[in-house]
Length: 250
Image 1 (cartoon, rainbow, N blue to C red):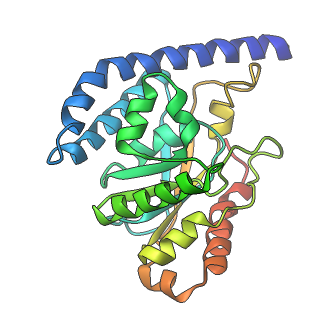
Image 2 (cartoon, one colour):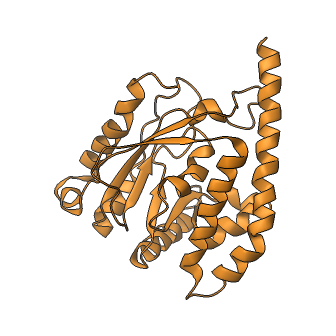
């Protein structure tokens, strides 16, 4: 039975890849035409929003948002979230569509055909193996924030592979950046994306359509960011994001 379910999961991953690259190809000329000009570049974010909704519809991924505040605030801010699936990245655009943001993500994405263009032009690649390139990425993130973009960061820096959905320890970079920019922080918890689409290299790992649940927590204000140390900010965000994960997920 395990291999039967694993085989079905593998077929679902192939289907998701087809849907993903279909929309990547269809939207590519529109993206390039918009992103090529400074005055229109920010509007390219709407391409990602459309792509996210289209992907979710084609792959049967409804989302239940549990917002623990009166409303989702206006940006810019720094979005920090747990990370267990590639769905975390792609869902973010339709979960938080009102204010454009850029991801700070692994530079390895630049090796993926077609995707690298989207990532390079509207996100900030980070090469953690090279101190000089990491510094350039950090400065690029500051420039993006000052231009009015929010920044989306996964502080775990990689996928956990055991004891899901428990999180790995957070890296300090997001909180150092928040302190330097005096930027508010928006914590986000993805509850069950790892059940809907596991790491693609794990061939028999779970993958299926289904309801995704996400918690959007109250904004940590600029004043709170200023008042707390980097370590306190890290611990506060970790505790906030981890709390819903103690609840049984769908």
